[in-house]
Amino acid sequence: MPTLILVDIQNDFLPGGRLAVAEGEAVVPVANALMQRADHVVATLDWHPADHQSFASQHKGKSPGDPIELNGLAQILWPDHCVQWTGGAALAPGLHSARIDRLFTKGEDPTVDSYSGFWDNGRRRQTGLQAWLLAQGVQQLWICGLALDYCVKATALDAVAAGFACTVVLDGTRAVGRSPGDGARTVEDLQRRGVRVAHSADL
Ligand code: VGL
Ligand code: ZN
Figure 1: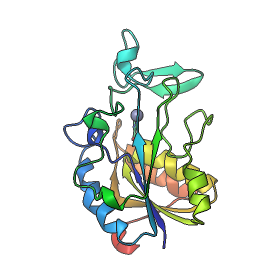
Figure 2: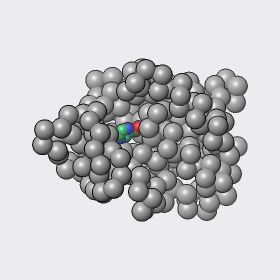
Figure 3: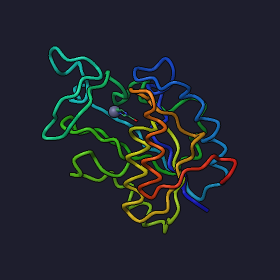
Figure 4: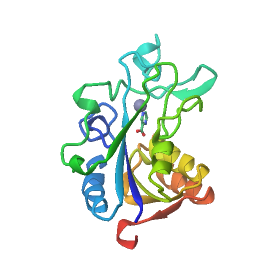
């Protein structure tokens, strides 16, 4: 059986949150159902210090959505979100979190963003997820969570690069969609780069 990775299913990415993803709450029942069919369940947490440099609030005169360069990397500025130990960083209330075997945090370093559950965006540091999966002998991954066009995408691409067979579960994810069509473009991109995509009913 595959291992299920739940990406950033946290309050700030749900409607009412600081970086709300439309219909974000819809991924919760899909994630809960997939847990019953997985060997292991792991979850990533976007876990920022209050002064994280991906926050527009940290840059004078900048607004969320503005592009900047952060330590040599292209960076989109976001509203403050998923600040460590705040309610916004907590897992979604309806998620069956007792079924999660391990949590992996990311985004703690204020100087670099971290979309993937494996590596920060500068590929400087790993979260420990890859080593953990290898230690369990995991070969196949299902990925769901938020958001499709950022953290789910980055996690799936790193999973394939690390040699795992990886399927993104389409009904178990939603896109931020800063521009119209971002979700559909992400799906095409993932498929072209070796990630499978499927609806949970077809798994
Ligand atoms: C995410 C933007 C900033 C995500 C996290 O979980 O997709 N997106 N931080
Ligand atoms: Zn973040």
